[in-house]
Length: 148
Image 1 (cartoon, one colour):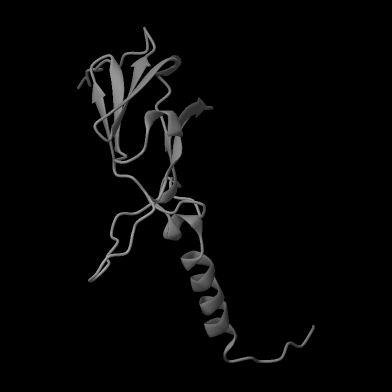
Image 2: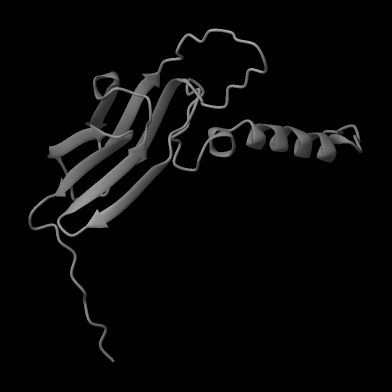
């Protein structure tokens, strides 16, 4: 039988290590879906809803031209990325305050299996990006009765 030294603090040190690992994980530092990554300098607000035969994704991206936004779908993941550029400002007399975020943004969402990657449309207007994703035909859900 092998003798091991008794270390009364080893349990506490293990807990400390595990907590550090948790607080540094992508799940804690971003959103649970992993849509916030370290390269993002700001995160646009996004609404996702189901509308009959398609899904709708709307993202608030004011100040970003539609041609500066890249929308991709690969392996069931919809990605939205782009950059809001900081406008040069002239200094005047008085206080200066900047609250509007600028820089690179990146959002990523997992879509349901019935989302059709061949039928996606994206339009940008008035600071809102609207993405419409059609559902595949025949993939509609149906209610199944539960018998006694």
